[in-house]
Length: 395
Image (spheres, rainbow, N blue to C red):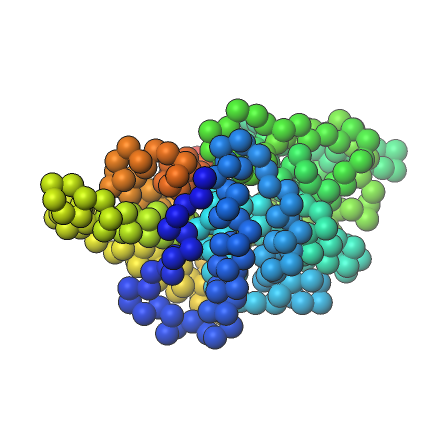
């Protein structure tokens, strides 16, 4: 099944935001959009229906520069700014949130911490191969008993008899069953949170897949299990100490989600607009009815607001002025916008909207995960509330 409107997709730019983008940003967007149309759109509905991870796309994602584009060129990235990175995530999520998850985990949660907190040897060992898509990486922070409260993590990295041993488990880890490495966060002997790189094949390290998902079905998700995994000292990130390190990675990923979710929203809006002009009821296109136009007008308004919010925070990030609270606002607002648009656009298509011939239900199910992961909808509200009042509502 292929969305017959996909090839006519041109995005939405209601207030001429393109005039604020550089020629490079527009060229990157158009290049990724063309790749998505050619390589992803023809297969994505079947992949989601069959809960099959399209692993063959990993190398192609590396070839188009979708892995760690914000990482400097000397380590395999493109060295682009945050808005260019966001625009790439937008084009990927127009196809599927799972595809964008694969890329944003690789870039923001694996490559970013190695680049920011790793040694020069670690950077040269891992980053170029990750950028090329020679293998996948994953990020181990969330645990079975600790999601929104990472400070309570139980995974430990203990020093014993001259060696480091990792014990514990991580849950809901994108890419883990196929990952060659995992960037894992654990508590050391002093109770400090530290980061390390765990490699596939290390004794005691396993990555069982999670089955039965109704969301992100074209993405692969699993656990990370550590049973006395011996970690060489050269695999410990030397500059990562405390919870601030993994949270900085999440800020990078959340910014990508803020842009990416708009891609899903715009895909749903595009299909709804085109369908409303073709579907005839009571002798005229349903797009001519006031209630349909009300839905469509509200959708484009919210997309436009989300674009401006993401773009502005991206500009601030390039200047080093974007706070985690600002990024939380982008993530929370834009994912909620996308989920509402997916639901409303499905209504415009009526019964056809629940079929795999159109992308609405797939986007809707995916976004139900996106609104929860990397900071739940309510947690981001509390981050904004604390920033606004200076009062901590978490505990």
